[in-house]
Image (tube, rainbow, N blue to C red):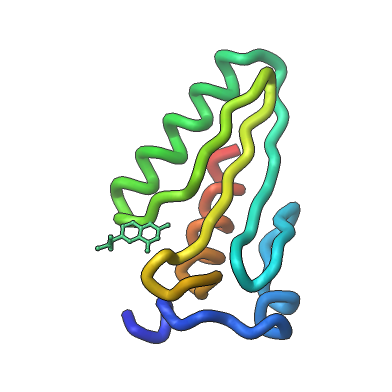
Length: 94
Ligand code: HBI
């Protein structure tokens, strides 16, 4: 919806940021840690599957036993309610 793709204010963002996520009105990010490289890659694939299902795609940075996930809504030029909904769902994939 259009409301979901409107940039959030700094105050709205501070209020609604999901557990473990940080950022600003430009983007939100969380780093997840894993017991192995393969476990992190498997998580990244689950995030990618979610991204395809919702047509909303985070930046993914796969490191050694860690994966960083970053959301912004390119069309809106910043963080929207949709980003926070997706970020919250990613917490559930961890
Ligand atoms: N993913 N993170 C993100 N931000 C977008 O604006 C976005 C997207 N995935 C698909 C998408 N936009 C499409 O709706 C547009 O490129 C048409």
